[in-house]
Length: 155
Image 1 (cartoon, rainbow, N blue to C red):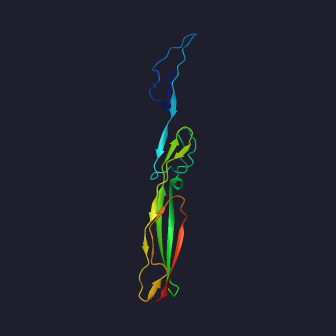
Image 2: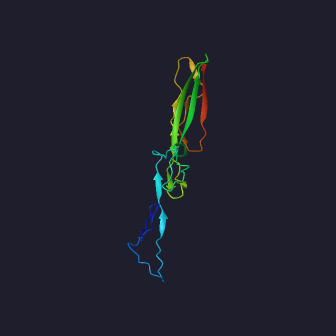
Image 3: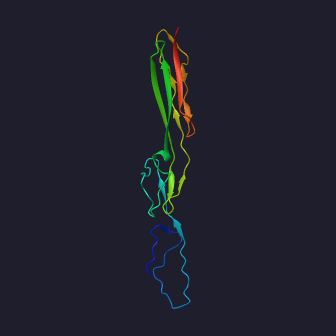
């Protein structure tokens, strides 16, 4: 009888017996402790949508949108004629995941943080901005997208 642990692995300090002879009665129990194989999924290499574990369980929660979020801050500068110049600033936050290759269960690491850079309203001769600059701002997974409106007024 061949023993094989293909979907699990032996727990630390455990080995599978290389052979065992069964007697007609009074067989000794053979106990081998197994643990699930867990695979780290980096945010740069998420799981494709249709992927499954080696045990044919769907992997839900380790896809691109589960591990990476892009959050946008839009800065609109409008001159007195009504022309608006739009500047988008994006920050990407991410986390890695661990997939249990037996059950398909996904656990996560912490989200990273990002930031939106500072913005200085461009100087235009004869005009004064309502806001001269926008400060750098840290971005987390819970940060909402922002729209900031600047208006240029005649001096």
